[in-house]
Image (cartoon, rainbow, N blue to C red; front, side, top):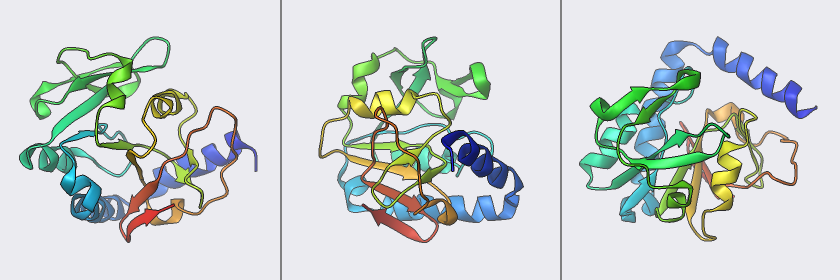
Amino acid sequence: MAKAALRDQLLTARRRRPLIEISQSTQAICAHLLAADPVRRAASVAAYVSVGTEPGTTALLAALVAAGKRVLLPVLLPDGDLDWAAYAGEGSLTPARLGLLEPTGTRLGVDAIATPDVVLVPGLAVDERGMRMGRGGGSYDRALARVPVGTFTCVLLFDDEVGRDVPVEPHDRPVVSAVTSSGLHVF
């Protein structure tokens, strides 16, 4: 299946997912992620603010901060690349383009993604090699290209989005794991 057609199919499935399933999956994903050794040991985590029917990150962000971790969140630049800023709580977020919420703090630059111990990314699917499919803008592939080898990178997904056949292009970057309501999947 072509990448655009698969992306449309996955987005349609997300829109049809019952809210109760999203809520239950979000709680389980948060619990599995917080229990994962790389996250427990991390001093800093790059994450994101979920939108729409993505697995939610609001409680996860609060839990990471409560655990004393420095959390970086993305700021979408006009060219589609991602700048980063420290998360200072839900009140520090401001509405941005494309329906995103972004941190209002000092911008740290696009290379700040190279410093966290853990990098959490959104996605629509991931294959058994860790190749993820995003929304098609390439923002997270550019960010992942700056992440040092050996960094724990993880995509948050629903169970039926793991193990999919994902078309791969030269610019696509893999993750080392996915977390779903059924647990942590390491590739």
